[in-house]
Length: 153
Image (cartoon, rainbow, N blue to C red):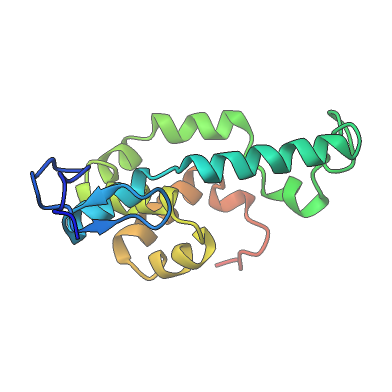
């Protein structure tokens, strides 16, 4: 058995006792494993994706703009926020103040990186800070007078 080499993440000499199952990079600890996993993009996976794309291209020409797959459904269209309202998010002092919170920023980064975003989003909505953020965003893009299902006071 050969001696462990340097860790691909932290560079610790002779400490890399573990290997990534996807790309075979060597690492020494759980923190280094997590760090590597966030950035791991093995060549084999990229090659498989390229092969799949080539197979799809071989089946016929890909649908162009305006093809049925490109046209949003009625439900998707209703959920779309117009650019003018999105701009209001960037101009909101209240939202900016919320985004100064490092915990909220970490939650948002985790959501961006998540594979199953809908499951994580359901969990995050139980976090008071995230719920406050979501409510603030909704209040900006959909003021109360525009909501369809609001009961009159």
